[in-house]
Image (tube, rainbow, N blue to C red; front, top):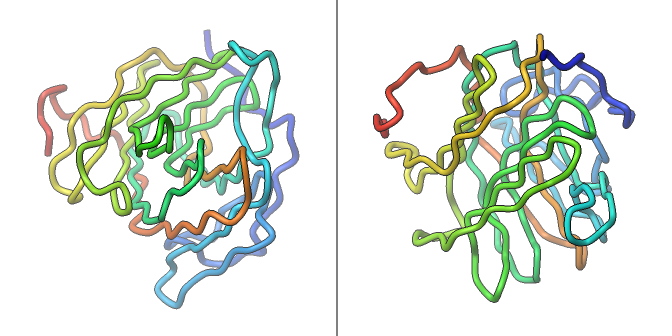
Length: 212
């Protein structure tokens, strides 16, 4: 069943600025500190106690993380470069695909159990959490998300060239999505992240084991 496109939490336009090569970005929980470099790169500093999570295990719902969403059609591939220094438990940054506060995915690096983990949270009413050790430098990596025909494909890259699979999962069909950079610091404030190299295109349509 297709999910109607809605955003229960208000999203504010990013003042029409050209950010990451686009002028249609809309903030969900705009951070107090963010700047756009002359080349369009986005730098943010996270606010205190920010997070995206729904219910599972912890029993709480949080929709306070920072997300800059750009419009994407009903089928797309999006990729993004993320650079930052993760220091405290649950520091995280990456890419998000969102329909509304009950249907979304976030994926990227998250600090857990004393090390940088490759992390993804898929939420359909309630959140799950999948992690695994990231064997490359976590300070600089790329994430790619492809959504088409009710399927989500997540990939990661250490160099922007080779893209191993992170996750393959069902994902709600919608006429359009919001996709873009995401960052949270549930236990603190002050995580500095630079986002760059955003690309939103038609689905790449590559074989599942084609890592290019």
